[in-house]
Image 1 (tube, rainbow, N blue to C red):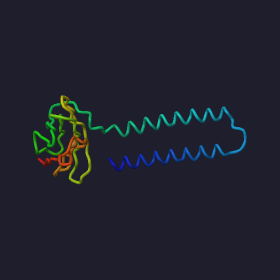
Image 2 (image 1 turned 135 degrees about the vertical axis):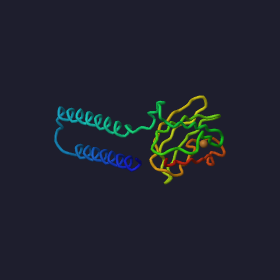
Image 3 (image 1 turned 180 degrees about the vertical axis):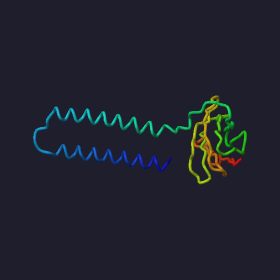
Image 4 (image 1 turned 180 degrees about the horizontal axis):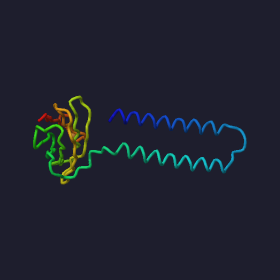
Length: 169
Ligand SMILES: [Cu+2]
């Protein structure tokens, strides 16, 4: 996922650079500009950018993990944050099973980030007092996963970590 984001970002940066270079070249060319042609080019460029923006947004948000709706056959994990620790209702989660995380906080706002055994961030959401944020995720690989706080929440924020295991059943 992070590789894809990097690739798309570099692609879009390249596109902006090409448009910039084309604009500079067009502005330094000699002769009277054809106003109708300029206006037509501008409209075409805006339509192209809108289409590219829509496609990139749709493709990049389609696997969004925040589509959580409570449904049967889902393992539920209640995650409660408080300064400065996590409380997980279970520490062993089966692999290849949809897991519904119900995330909230006892005190201030925290951010929960779930990292795989290689240290790659899988998903995150806010842990807020009085609100339960839901995230559904299916773990594919067994191993030790880490929970880290993603939002500065006070003096011992850096130590606000926990761990759970994903096991093959
Ligand atoms: Cu924190």
